[in-house]
Image 1 (cartoon, rainbow, N blue to C red):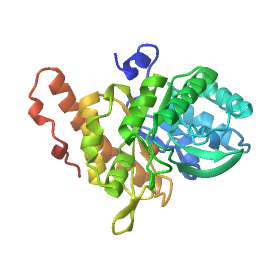
Image 2 (cartoon, rainbow, N blue to C red; image 1 turned 45 degrees about the vertical axis):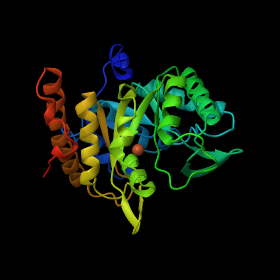
Image 3 (tube, rainbow, N blue to C red; image 1 turned 30 degrees about the horizontal axis):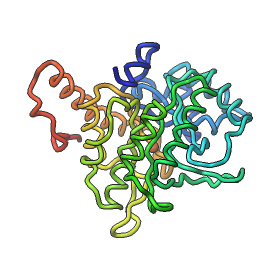
Length: 307
Ligand SMILES: [Fe+2]
C-alpha cells in the first residue's frame, strides 16, 4: 500500500489540479470566481495564523468551496534549532480547523538561533543530517498528530561536504521518517538544468509510492546556464512532461500550480489550470490503460501534448 493509499483509507483526499491561494485573489475565489476549475486550494498557514482583518473570514468562505491542503514555509526542518512550542501550537490549531490530509514543509533550513532568513536553504547531503531531519519530521508529525510530507527544494549551491547525492539523501529521510513526499517536478527540472543531470534518471530513483502530492511552477532564466525557480512564469512544457511522467506511474494525485510573483489575473491562472488538467487527464488515461493490461508502450515522457 502506498503512503497515499494509506491516507486515502482513512479519509478523502482531493486529486487533480489545485490553485495556490494568494492574497491578491482570495476575495474573488471566496465569492466563487474559481468555482469548477481547481479541485482544491493549497495555502500557507503562516500567511494566516496571525491575520486579523478580512482574511480569516475570506478563508472560511474559500474552505466552504474547496478542499484545503496546507503547505508550510517556516518549519526549518534542516535547522539545528529546537522547534518553537508557540509556533507548533498555532500551526496545530490552524490545521485542526481546516483538517488537511497531511501537512508539508520544505527539506531545507530557513533560520538559525531564532533568526528567520526568509529563504529555503539546502542542507549538506549526509547520513548524519538525514537522521537529524528525519527525527524532526517525526517530531513534527507527533506534535501535529497529522501525517507529514517533505518537499524537495531547488538549490543553487551545495552547503558543506555532501557524502550522498540528493536522491540518496531524500530516500534516507523518507524511509527513516516514514513520511510522504511532496514532489516538486519544477524543482527537479531546475536542479537538473543547473547541476547537469537527467531529470528522468533522478525521478526513476524516487520511491513513487511515497508521493502524496506534486507541485508544478514556472521558472525563469537568470544567466545563460542558470535558471531560477521564481514561480513567476507559466509552467514550461518540460515540466508538464515530468508531471505527466509521474502521474502515469502513480495514478491520481493532487497537483498544485504554484505562482508567487508576476501573478496574472485570476482568469489566466484558471486557464493554466485547465491546460494542466488536460495533460493530467491524458497521463491518467495512460495509467488506467497500463493498470487494465493495455499497452505500456503509450507511456513515454515525450507523448505529452497540450495546447
Ligand atoms: Fe514547490
